Length: 251
Image (cartoon, rainbow, N blue to C red; front, top):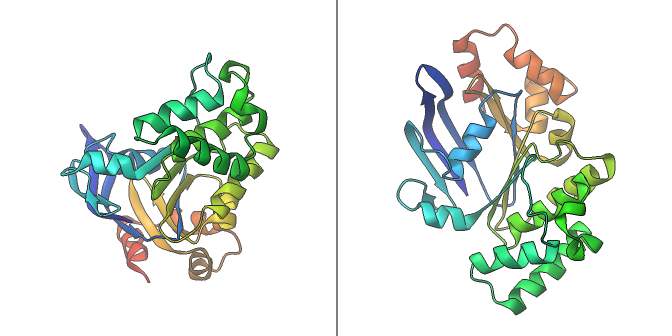
């Protein structure tokens, strides 16, 4: 569902991504972990074709991002913590508008909205104008908008940022429920406890490089730590470049 090979992205002399090689399959929630500036958002934007790689390749759901960007865009849904909604439109109007962009009929759209209402608890957000939403209400509609066309790859980039405890819980439960054959969820966060709860495997990024990749339990075992946060610090603090790259190649 996702494969990057020797992916790099530079801006002048600044290296945002350096030789990133990753793969993730269907049925997974795959975590991209690291602090702000680690390269997580750059990686997701490159996967979504919003950025062009400086070098290397990316394939999403079998499509190359350079050769078939339109097919990639149809295959992904993207959510981040800062997405807005048209203030004058209701949630239902927003979802119908986006469904039309993907070629869904009115009947298909209304059926899909019912599914997403059940999954996300959209409730009154569907018939309330977005300008009157709380942050949590808005984020639910943003998520529903991203998946209205039921894409095989869902990308969540710091999607719980700014949410209250109830909205955050609803989003995490949605991620867990969305784990199924034919779907890959990429979950980017710097909140390690969230990744421990929802992710099957994780890649830890630091300064644009992959430090390590593996199941959550494997990362903890490799470092001898009891939490991903402690494991992260054990992997990135005081390690020279060569040691970090050796860790990234470990099984």
